[in-house]
Length: 555
Ligand SMILES: [Zn+2]
Ligand SMILES: [Zn+2]
Image (cartoon, rainbow, N blue to C red; front, side):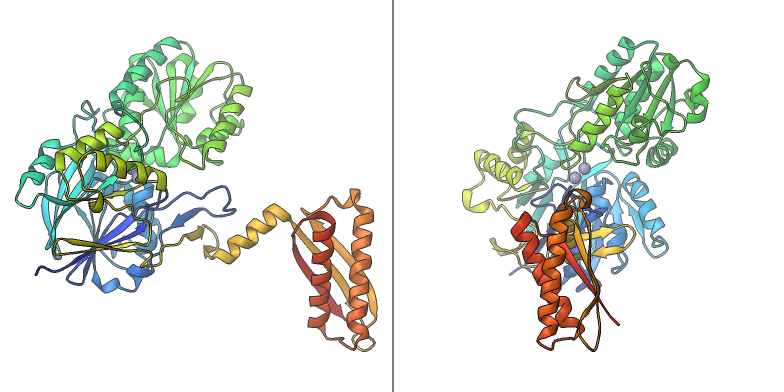
């Protein structure tokens, strides 16, 4: 009997973001990715959302390392947080490690963290696992799929991938190696595959098609300055923008901290090729006619303080946008960011600029495989078991259907969610639902981790407002000395609701008098009675439930 293997999903199954799972055998754990999720609009004041690391924290000594499939924030952004409690080496492509390192460095954790670069096609022992790193194409260069050779058989994880046959750097998804792994004795026991685009029919177009669209766009707008926003990690996109710009006689200025940092790193590593004499600093841009400048910046998600948002609101120091500008948003809004992006687009239209985005021109393609590519992978590796990963629930359901259509047995397809634990033992697979804690961990960049309670309070304040009632009571007689006074933010507009507030004051006064009359002059009783009475009054009169804060002073 071979040792059983457990797979535990800590994030990414049921949402886009905070991808993290672990593979475990012989008491040793290998973690695959450790990402963050960007907050939803109903998470006020939250900067990012992490997986619940309880499972790993409680088994810190068993963690052999983290395999980083690629450096997107939804895969790498959580490393600096997990590293606070658990020490481990990180395995990934040199670029992935290079892009991930700054967050770890900022957290002061670089000294005690080993970064171990792995090459395309490399097979490496990590604890009881043998891991084979297979190149895949995605929207950041040098991404990996990985085959985990375990005592139970081979578990293949696609990572984020597409099958781009004409990638910008010529590094294709290594279909030959994937096929070879599948043809070995035992084949692929289980496939875990990217579900992001499982609802999308057909094939995802090649990244090269964006280059062609950009070249046309740049030619069509001679004489105008062109501002392109894209993800700072999408270095192939940046390369293609730079080529289109240089090809039409422009100089390129990079704007945004992460854009400048990533481009510098990629140029040092020889991953992108932009002649130094065509790159200018943004403060030099005003010295050139608009038609000779291209600005490449961050902010494609409409992030409020990003370079692009500042330009849209006329607050950018060097880039003043107007009729001589064409703004290109070469990205697609991540769920939750749509309204921010729309706001930025509208703001640019108000300046007189023209805006090009993936809704009106082919200036973006996805980095994730569509249905035909997903089926292709399923057909190529013929897994015995299949678990869709990386997606909202509906994406995973669709992906499961593709697996059935591709010949995986219905009883061997499992749609799992965060917190589920899969145990493989001698050709048998069991799923223990909700086996480990996997809720959201909210991080507020300034106050640190916040709990559900704080978030609930913030939502209540945001949606219902707050009402504070002040009353001063004589300690001995129990008589009201002054007040009640009512102050509110977000419940009613005080000047327009004078009579309502007067009624509220009267109600509280009666409640306090009743409470003190029966001898209850203690502070807590008065407070509680003021809160309860006011809450009931507000709910009856206005159907609202603001936070109520009674302040009782005793003299
Ligand atoms: Zn990705
Ligand atoms: Zn991802």
